[in-house]
Amino acid sequence: MQGLETWVINLDRAPERLARIAAQLDRAGLPWTRLPAVDARAMTPAQRAELDDAAYRRKHGKEPVLGELGCYLSHVEVMRRFVAGTAEFALVLEDDVLLTEGLPAVLQGLMAQPGRWDMVKLSGVHSGTPVPYLDVAPGHRLAVMLSRCTGSSAYLLNRRAAQAYLRGLLPMALPYDHVFDQGWRFGLKVRMVTPWACDHDEEVATTIVAPAGTRKFHWTKRFPTYGYRLKNEGRRLLYGITEALRERFA
Image (cartoon, helix red, strand yellow):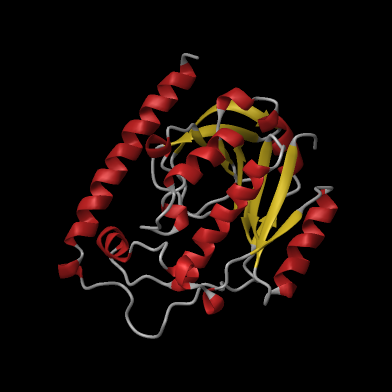
């Protein structure tokens, strides 16, 4: 597809995962480039320093996991390489994603409407409470999200979004999928496709493994986290309503 490049984030020690996603992309007719993921087992001091430990604990209410930092830094590296190139759009995929047959048509429909979005989630966890406003492919609509929708296994973004992320994503204070959909924070049109154009491959196990023991803080130590989430979800709802009204009267 003209103007589109596809990136697959994959650890060097996970060739079987790469083979699974490669076969899907080949069937879909999507040329792709592998991005070697940042491995938590071989992280440099400079990479570890990109974690704001205190902010993470306050906002997320859990002990940080280096695997999450590796995932976060891998997505940031995709942005750097995308911006350094000439493509207009980037499809970013984690290697445990499951592509649907409708994905190519969805991508074409989105790229035909470049002024209506900056980043579009193509898969996710939780519904996101979508407010659809534009048909982009048979059976798929572009929508604003009113509620939380985690997951970052598949999304499409433009150069404006990548540049904004590079300015504001680091240091890491939350898992990547809790941050990059905050459209109000980055000044972006953050959207989703409903129904999803991609899903999670349930036959692939996660590579982000927490150490043994309780990672989540006791509820008595999570009051700052509750306060952050209440404020964040309020901002998300306000942002979503504002964007939905803007699209309705566009």
